[in-house]
Image (cartoon, rainbow, N blue to C red; front, side):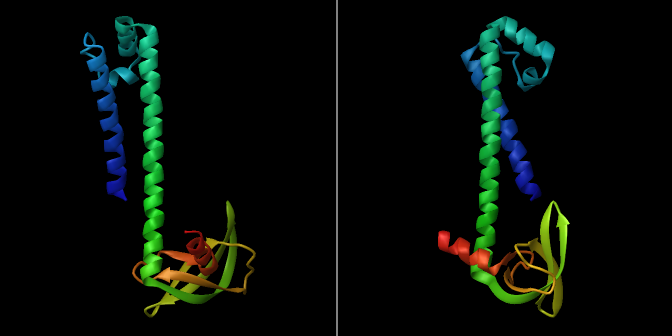
Length: 163
């Protein structure tokens, strides 16, 4: 996870450096333009004077929009990769188990708490509850390779059909 966060920031700062390099190519008389210029008001004012207010505003807006686009693409890729990892784990190492709901708690949403058993261990976890009540039973699927990956069996089957 730490490596993914570091990679994310490296890509964002790399993109900013690329935007600065392109700006230097397009406007050769602005060699003192750097990443700091985008965030420092006096430096940006000087940059605006050198190339014109309209062009500087366009460059600033373009860099900002492209950074947001890049953040969105990276975020989407990260969550897609995480979802794919969970699906692969459940496909390869999935084990189905019947569980008994022992508690329902509300923390932003309704969550069902239950125990499941794996290699002589009792693991407690929670999933978003549907219409379950304390004492109800339900089926889950979890990965024997990574028991932290747990899903409701019917949700897993429904998502498998939609693929």
